[in-house]
Length: 226
Image 1 (tube, rainbow, N blue to C red):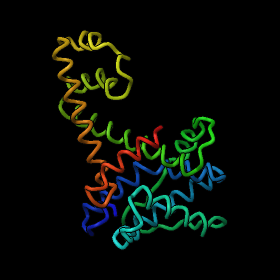
Image 2: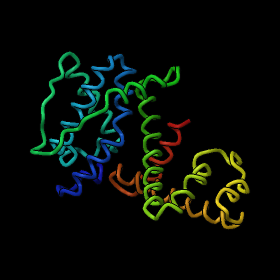
Image 3: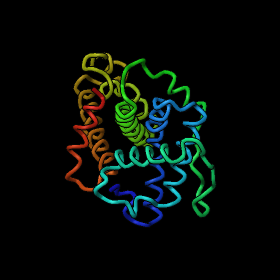
Image 4: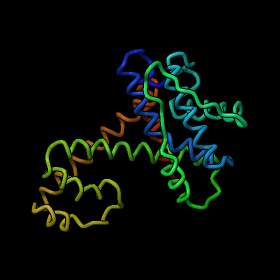
């Protein structure tokens, strides 16, 4: 199961909470696609994560139930089935701050969902993959920002080479913006891409039980992105 929940330490608890905060929107989108009203989806998603964080559920979870992504969806489906008509909101966790969601942000994000025929499960998978990629980019940007304004500016210019199709921004244009040679800019892009891939694998490792599952999870996520 999820590595963040395999140990009972404070560090593992913090790691689990960070993952929950990063990946709550796919479940909210799932509930909305299943027909829940915004308020219902908000309450159900919040209640689910409050319970998850309070009970340290992952420490006693059956490893055969799968990865964090699958575990969350299966558990959330159980909550929808058991408490569809009545959601009780309780503070839990022995002093730990309860998990809270920004209702306005959640519904605004859902409203810009494209009109498609994805099943709730497929929508969850896609939003999960997008959330993971966004978290990787945030971590990389935080690293660059921590190294000073110069490197932070470089990241803003060259991040397009991490996100967009090749050729969206000519390398020469990026070099001109940075005041670097094309060769130096190419080297900068290469280093950022390498670090991006490292963080990507590290993020996935946090959501699987063993290193052997990483490659399969990577393939699954790219399939979800279509």
